[in-house]
Length: 173
Image 1 (tube, rainbow, N blue to C red):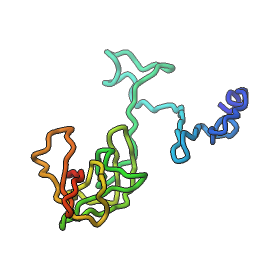
Image 2 (cartoon, rainbow, N blue to C red):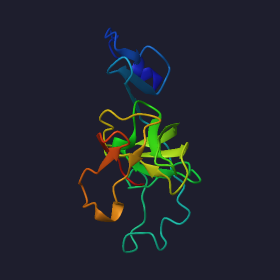
Image 3 (cartoon, helix red, strand yellow):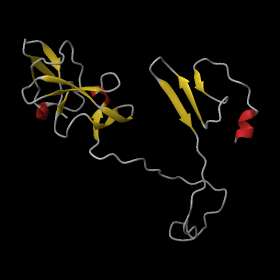
């Protein structure tokens, strides 16, 4: 692979942080000051215990050079919680409503981020009320009255009242 990469022309884009000039099998491209795209390609030879057995296609063996679809499972996280992406503020902050209906800021560990969801491995506990809509003027320490989660229709933003009568958005995990 190194021989092939060494034949490519040098890259001069200043946003390319890791590219063909290193021995890495990945590229890192800066999109913004706080966001970068990381791409990697890995080649490996899978071990097939019985290419002629029950997993074969109508008895046709799995021949060398053919492609297969494979599922590669990642590292499991115990007690991971999936939240709507809208719950995340910055890189590692969510807000919850505590037992006294007070907004509390929490630092979380994000282990996966998708278009619409995030998965966190620490920072909140199962069953806590997580604010999933914009705070709109409310912040840590403000008293709120969360909306009844059973009255919320899918996709609808929830609204609560702060202690001063100011409307804010809140949700229930």
